[in-house]
Every structure is written in C-alpha cells, then in structure tokens.
Amino acid sequence: MKHHLKEWFTAYTLLAPSFIGLATFIIWPMIYSGYLSFMKWDFLTEPRFVGLRNYEKLFNDDVLRLVLWNTAVYSVAVVFITLILALGLAVLINRDLKFRAALRAIFFLPVVTTLVAVSGLWLFIYTPDFGLMSYILRLFGSSGQAWLNQPNAALWAIIIMMVWQGLGYDMIILLSGLQNIREDLYEAAMIDGAGHWALFWNITLPLLSPTLVFLLIVSIIQAFRVFDPVYIMSGGSGGTANSTATLVFYLYKQAFTNQDAGYASAIAYLIVGIAVILTAIQLTLSKRWVTYQ
Image (cartoon, rainbow, N blue to C red; front, side, top):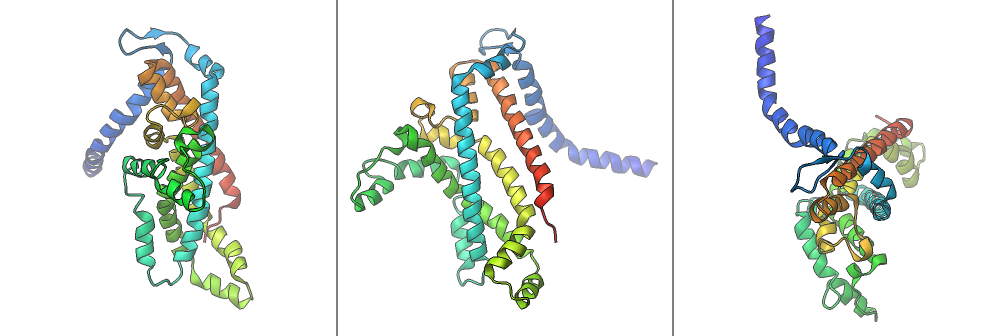
C-alpha cells in the first residue's frame, strides 16, 4: 500500500507543473470566457449580465457571416491544396534521389520561420511597384497589381502564402508515413502486374490514410485559428470590406477595437463549437476509409 502511495505521489508531483500550466492558461480562460459570453463588458466598467444577447447577436451579424465565409474558403483552400501538393512532393522525395536530404530541408525551412517573418517577406513579394510578383508579371507584359487591396484577390494572396509556408510540414509527415509502408506489399503487387498508378491507388493511399486523417484534423483546426498573417498582411484592418477577415481576427477586433469582451467570448465559443463538430465529423467518416497495416 505504501509503495503504491509513493508511486501515486511521484507521478502526480511530476505531472503537477504541466497540470498547473494547463489549468492556468487553458482551462481557466475557457471557463472565464464562458462567463464573459453572458456579459456586456468594455474592460473599463463592471461586467453587466445580458443573458443570451451575445449569442443572439451571432445570428444577426452580417459581418460575421462574411467572416465565416472567408474562414471556410481559407480553410478548405489551404488544407486541401497543401495536402495535395505535399502528397505529390512526398511521393517524389521518397524515391532514391541524390539530394533528398537537401530537398527536405529546403521545403521545411518556411515551417520553422515565424509567421511574422513569412508575412513580411510576402508583403514585399506582393508590393505593386517593386515586388517579385509584379516583376514576374511585367516580364509577361502585364502590370503590377495591388493584390492585398483588391477584395477578390487579397484572401487568395494570403492563401498562397500559407500553402507555401505549411507545405514542408505536411510533406515531412507524409514522408514519414510513406517510409512506414512495407516494401514487400509493393513487390507482391508488381509481380501481379500492377503499374505505378495502381500501386499508388491501392497500396500507398489506403495505407497512408491514418496520416492523412491526422493532417486533415490538425490542419483544419489550425486554419480556423489563423490570425497573424491576416493581421499583418491587411495592416490590422482585415482587408478592404473585410475581404481577408477571419473568425479569430474578427474576435480580436470585437474585443480590442470595439471593446466588447462579451461578444468576443461568444465568438470564441462559436469557433470552439465549429472545431469540435468538424473534428467529430472527420473522425466518424474516417472509420469508413482509414486502413491500417
């Protein structure tokens, strides 16, 4: 009995720092945010109880509907374009290439670069007068464009940047999954006369499905939390007519520009609810097509 108590005490002593950090920076803020979502608070006066008024406002906010659409377009585009390109690169680099290690390092470099630095770099690329994008267009006889000031182009400009930034991470994870697939499966299929496409479709893709599900869930959650590039690339405005504003940016704007912490907290719970629903749907659907070795 004394031995078990000693193990219990040792285990929870070692877990205590992590639990304290979790409780302080995640659990308590979530509880307090839930409390604030029923309040009207401008950070200066005492919070005033308003019931479900903040949640009712969610259904009547035209800007929020636009922001939800922007977030959905951004998330779907970034997640699926990145996954498709990363899968192609992973399959290519998984071959016995001479400079495979160097290619992995080159593609992974943007991942370890801070989003602030990446956003600053792409701000220069998108500069209408002397940016790299405008220079390339002028080589083909076109003129430079103010990409980030055009409502129809600004969001896609950020999407392109984030695909470039996240491509290396997805590629490395998929490459790890590819290297865990047994070679004898390919050898047996080739003996039966399977071609490259048949090998990919019937062996590679099914056995890579657990990795794809993991990346899909993580990437969608990260996409819904995007803030830094939207804030930096739009100069803190969310773009012309809120063309690049996303949910987390809109939450920030409500809290620290409009000083409405209650409504911002309601938006935070909306984000959490959407993330939980999407994750549950993905996990449910994945049971039908995930294949394990």
